[in-house]
Length: 296
Image (cartoon, rainbow, N blue to C red; front, side):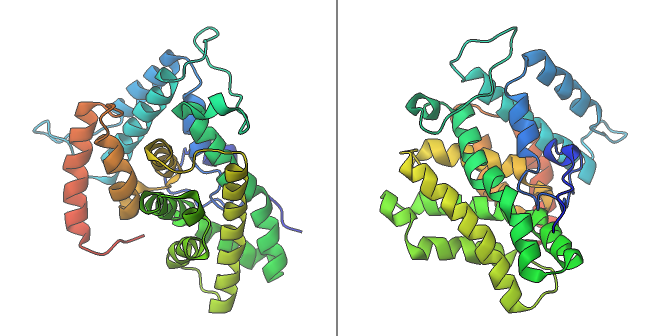
């Protein structure tokens, strides 16, 4: 039987390169960032001071071109997104905090981003992730191999799926288009490209089928509950979820291009101007150095 050894520091994204073999990446990052969106503003302010204190400048006082600064700036952008979720939540506060309750069947719950992102994350990531480790173990029959597969999923599997889902939603104009076989295959292809562990192609395909089938079941439940899967509001929170869940945005160009950049350009001012400018400065140079191919 598979043993789920998921650690809370994975959910809180304390390690930007997390490859958690417990949750297989389904819980990485987004739980901690969305939890911040329910806490008092001073909690986020303290986190912001800590992050800013970690940014390094050179002797000329200019922003240093290094992995540490890229990570701190992405986290500051994530923190601004958490601020947006808190500010735009219309519910009353209790000593500055929000209740973390949401029901997919409550139509009012889908009218603002804070609940919308949590409902999506629960259905297509958390609930799916509960069963996937055991299913993978049963498939391969060897815990060491199963652990390696789950670590591979945790690298960039989930954020790759989210980016593929974002692109699907942007293309379809009817709900029926989202549940078509071609759309499901698009998710499978996106995940397959980002699995790099050395396993037989047939086994790799079976792992992809397990993960995407679970995600697809979550999408079907959302549709059954009349959750508004299509439209700009859903795309926006899916982008937030991809940025929250990605273990290292500077190693995943698709998340940067299709999630973080559109969020920084959103007309609602989701990310502070100084953070946007610094992220653009560092990451433009970084991707030029990396070359045209996406490297994971």
